[in-house]
Image (cartoon, rainbow, N blue to C red; front, side, top):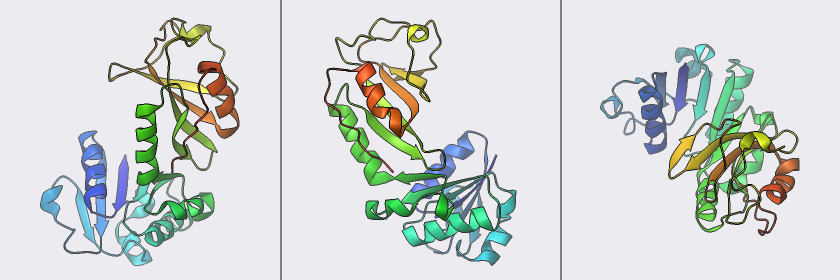
Length: 228
């Protein structure tokens, strides 16, 4: 997979290292010479340019990329890049960083954003996750599909503790995608039994979040925590 990342700051470089470690091809774009230090991520390709300019994106061969990541510290730049990636270059998937949560409402398909990632919102969700066993925590949203990834930590006394995954009828448009147990991720099968303390990760729709909360942890308070 070829990934173009705009913004070679700490966030962009961290994403690049992870992707390179997984065998993907990465191009980093940044207009700040201080940030463009190829020695920090030597396996990546680098381009010193403004990612909001069409000429720079043409030089980056953005149309040949599978994913465009707008990871700069400027929300306006991230929106412009996402829109150009979709409308001018036909990039299949765009991921945009939201720096100011107040701007989060703009990061949707009308600006070409497939997935918006708000670090402050995500940190809040993770903090809530640590202290709210049994509460539904929204980790992030898939903007185009109006779906989201949510987490529920199975509390003691849950009717699902000890039950097989295959014996549960989940709400409509809801899929259990992972179980995290003792800090290790498990790909759930129909024969796996859920245990109290398991972190259950679901892909679901906003309309089904309350139903999912009531089903898995009916006695807990409802705290759906929005992410970006």
